[in-house]
Image (tube, rainbow, N blue to C red; front, side, top):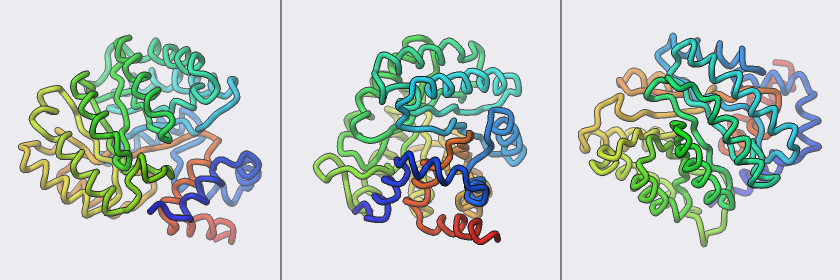
Length: 315
């Protein structure tokens, strides 16, 4: 089941007063750099270029979620509008990730759509075939609007991809619908939110089994014929090995799918993925609003708390 620890950390991630406190603490800020690729577009670009030298692609994310201030949604879009041309100028095969609540959906859907269309207008007309505007998935209450947002962007000619969460019971149906709509790319994650058993798998074994069922569909002939490029986001080595076996069985070669991991998490496993000949992408957040993201990373893996304690101790 989703642990009490994870639910606790999600609550801390959404605390405005705690966010303001920890983000002013220089030692905790130093710890956050383990997971954050920079504070602005220039540093995020440098991180993406450094990863490229290692044979790793990037998925860049401007930090901020569940935003309720319209001015901050504009800052998010402004940052991405500055970033997109720079990525294109350097020829980077890079995903740019965005949460619906980052651009206004937590305020009102009309604002979210307005900001999404601003982003659509900024996406380079000429871009790598594997460069996508990746729409992230948030809690279950946002699934329908997230799918609708991807469709809206696609209707404006944007290569809009989407993230699906394996722990939601509805995801198999959502994936089938997206394949019919010829979605160009799906990133599959387990899901990091706390949802009730009626709409979500709550046991780890159930979630892993759902993930593999969905992975098999994403690697199927039907998905390949629809033009889907699958992205498997996981740090579970057993899952990675199983997906690699599914890929071989389906006739998918390395480069026809990829694995994605979080920046700063399990570097030894990242090296193993590259050594096996598979394609790797890292999710690289950037920006000043880093606490909610870092808190959720700690919630997913309490071992990540070690970095914060070491920073507080000045080590």
